[in-house]
Amino acid sequence: MYYSSGNYEAFAHPLKPEGVENKQAYIIGAGLAGLTTAFYLVRDAQMPGERIHILERDPRAGGACDGWDYAQLGYTMRGGREMDNHFEVMWDVFRDVPSIEDDSVSVLDYYYWLNKRDPNYSLCRATVDRGKDAHTDNKFNLSDKACMEIMNLFFTPEDQLQDKKITDYFSDEVLDSNFWLYWRTMFAFENWHSALEMKRYVTRFVHHIGGLPDFSALRFTRYNQYESMILPLENYLKAHGVDFQFDTHVTDIEFSCSDAKDNDRKVATELRFVHDSDAAGQAAAVGLPDSGNPAPQGAEEVIALSENDLVFITPGSCVAHSSFGSQDAPAAFKPELTPGDGWDLWKRIAAQSPEFGHPEKFCGSPELSNWESATVTTLDERILPYIEAICQRDPLSGNVVTGGIVSVKDSNWLLSWTINRQPQFRAQKPGQVCVWLYGLFTDKPGNYVKKPMRACTGREICEEWLYHLGVPEDQIEELAATSANTVPCMMPYITAFFMPRASDDRPLIVPHGAVNFAFIGQFAETPRDTIFTTEYSMRTGMEAVYTLLDIDRGVPEVWGSAFDVRALLNATVLLRDGKPATDMNMSIIEKLALAKGLDEIKGTDVYGLLKEFGVIPTDADNADTYEPAVGAMWPGIH
Image (cartoon, rainbow, N blue to C red; front, side):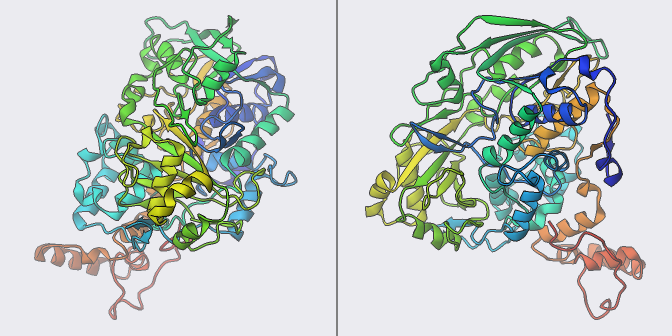
């Protein structure tokens, strides 16, 4: 497997690997990583679909990319996905998958046209004082010291960031800024999370710095992530004969690698699983209220694996042990592991070789990796004016509404909420609006509801949200009870992948010496890319298939804006809210040295670039200085 960049590799079709039609492939998990793995087996490896088996513990595909209407609860979305134009693997997949909205065009084309016609941006990024605009005004408000702290992290090698926290690198100069408000609420980072993952995010998305304050860097699907991304991909795979086995808990995988050392041959030899036909077990798998946390029921089955078989394993799960509440019941916090969940399986696998990772680094502290979300469905028009007053758009227009999350700066829960294009579900009734909200601090009492978020019913969470919208207090309880249905969801491990880690805590996609197996998903390690993105999951699937089957076509590299001087110069200025570098606090000696250096390069392309991107100001002395053509990059691009 090798990385590539450019259209030559991107547009090519690889040759069929020799003997692939005689192999069987078993994919553990039908999340985005598992579905992408199956896609590349079908399209690029040209494996017959009936020889591809996807084993999924839930009753449906999608994993964390969900969106569902439960008869006993209502509409639910555990989370949402923000897409980037440089999710190279994602768009390589979806250029060939028919859209659920219009099956005569691809998912990519429909999405492209939609976001060209209706571009995303926010008109109110944050509120304070019960619904008033916080006037972040697209500013980061970073001091020179804060900018230097971010730059220091950017340039620190990953091997020096192992097991380090964000607070080891950022002081209150960063943590009290608009930058950190934007960052932590958009990506769900906590102060105690991994400095290594923070560095990856800063370097991965440095080209998006200009679009971070108002979310103009982002693009969204027409409907929820399940209907717009998962269903089309599932339909594509089923049309090619891929075998889906739902309600199937893989309890263990055996490997012949006792006392294995680097480069020893490692072979998956046996796969154990249980088909859970018990209704209570199926309810528990998706976290329905009052379902408990039982082990899967049914007789254990065994598949003997040969070296000619392929096994793709999804270790861990950010949505494992998610629990739904209801309008009148809180969502339970139940992080206890059970056989057949992603964490228990990974622990059993990891016990067989140190190269298979260290799951306890991620699942060992659920109090530090949880947050809670809720889906609010409005039932009449009475809440909508308060929404429109903040987002300055009609929630029922069918177009962009909030343009990303609205964060409540003075919320004890650090509450954020968003409304994407409505309807969010194809079956949603006219006039209804589905709102997604989440709180990072689930153990803190609310501002209006004096209880921790995790102890609140859906109705109480709605009350807290309505309070921050500015609804008069004498109307809050009635509106929460009669004008909305709110379904909370507690997720103990939702940011487990952000926990501080070392380089070997996540297994490589294909470990050293692995013959017939690979790890995929958010807890498999691939260089440079960022977890908690659709692209990361999909990239691991592509790399796994290409490596094990030696497919001779390049895997598109992670977009290299961190190595593009244009992007770096652009971000340097935008991070300082447009101020040139010459305005930084410097001593007289430093200013003289800078002036001397700039004078030495005057008339060169380097000087022209610095002027083009605002690193140095335009004045009477340099107004006519030549500026080189910069191609697909200009100040503010994202």
